[in-house]
Length: 179
Image 1 (cartoon, rainbow, N blue to C red):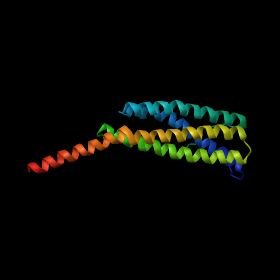
Image 2: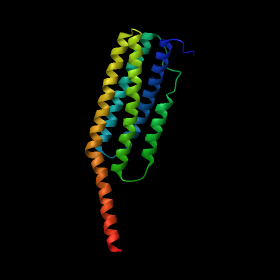
Image 3: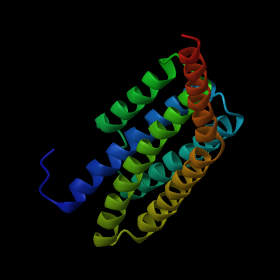
Image 4: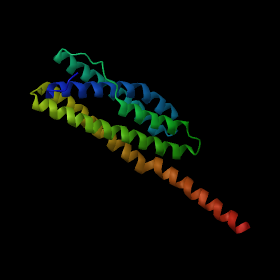
């Protein structure tokens, strides 16, 4: 498709977001399963349900535009999900892995926030008022998810990972004294 109008660019960006969200629907159950913290598991499970709603909103926007959702694969989300999968495959302390999973999830959220801001702006410029409202609702939820992940990271998960670091430091200190 030749991108010679803002509407065409808007549709391409919407398709990219649709691909991103549908990829995330498949990835979040794996993230939840791989998390050891009950709070993190719950956060991933909650975000899965929210992400399904995001897909429904995008479906609604495409239906109003009488356009198809297909035709685009979000390579950025594919890469972000691969990074999360690499974290799941790591061996090590569960709390440290959880801290890494939160980081991977926040990178996803930041990508989505940027993408939704872009399409919301395009929708506004194109006079797509209903789409602006739906996109803003999703954008607000993505921001809330990012804040929740930050709180989780600053709370239990990173503190447990830090405790692991301190325990290793203590073991190393005791070991060096024995020599």
